[in-house]
Length: 59
Ligand SMILES: [Zn+2]
Image (spheres, rainbow, N blue to C red):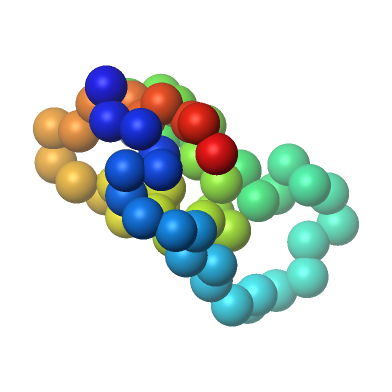
């Protein structure tokens, strides 16, 4: 399993809209079912890769 830290330092995106609830930063990946934090572009990009596995969140 690939570790999140192996993808490099956090890549923080710019805010596009204000969110009212913390949960709005999260979505479930349709490929692997893992919850993804939109604020970390490493996670977003990983979960766009075809055939990817779940990430081990270690940082
Ligand atoms: Zn995924």
